[in-house]
Length: 102
Length: 271
Image (cartoon, rainbow over all chains, first blue to last red; front, side, top):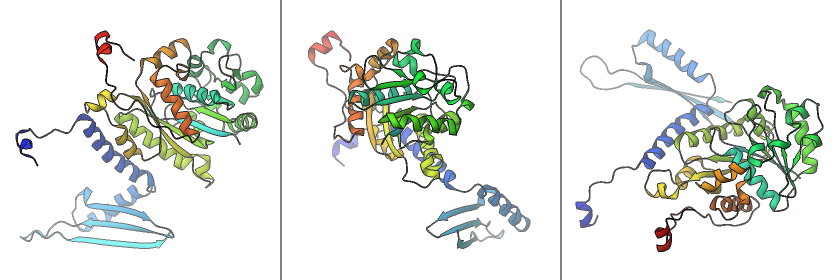
């Protein structure tokens, strides 16, 4: 950093930079949705319903992800359980990974 | 072997028909027998852009339905040797495009032509799907603007999943990016996405950059493909893009702000 930079006001992201950033975020999301099979949202909803029978969790605390590799796929289900009511700030995370032939 | 090229974009109004007319004419100027087909059934405009609207008697849909022969519907361009236009119907709708019908006509054209350019309608419905289904190459027309880039990404996904090459598991459709309405001055000011940014996001090879130019409207007013205006920067940029498509190594032009000379400033000349 040169001494002159000290006097400059920090540069704001230009409109074009913002456009690029917004596009990168929205397209990352849309591309992920495009490649995943149709049943994933339904699976996520049903899993959430089952878990809710036993633990009260928020709707966004279950993440379901499908990865495809050659010959097999992994279904990763990530459930974030709420911290125990008393004191401890620990968040219990249960992770189930299932692998099978695709 | 004839090659089928689809000119597509997802979004409307980005320059698909202008680009189909210019690119097709550019290929014909280089000696390749070229046919441009309008797939925008019900909203035909290729005939106007090519300046042959008063010569349309039979159209693409008539030929699909067996109401006319292909030779009766093809319009030979009066300016450029080897260039033909297949206009579409203004009264029918896109359901008239059947897969078998389109395939039959493309197969017939393939026997005669070197290049067949399918000018796609906007959207991702039947007309657009039929335009891209049989393609060997896809030219994605994109404006440096968020909605156009997003729709281009979407249409790339459709090409990769729903084209015949994808369905049959053949070599994928070759994708090319054509950035249109590029304004280097606004890019320099940070008001417009840089071509590098669009490339980074879409991640397909760059075929050409067509600068925003008054020549495009001038050409469409008189029904002349802009590539024939060889004094204009847009016309030259299309000609360069055709050269690159054919494998020539050509630098990209018109991407930097041109420094105006003293007299240009004095006379306030524009491109």
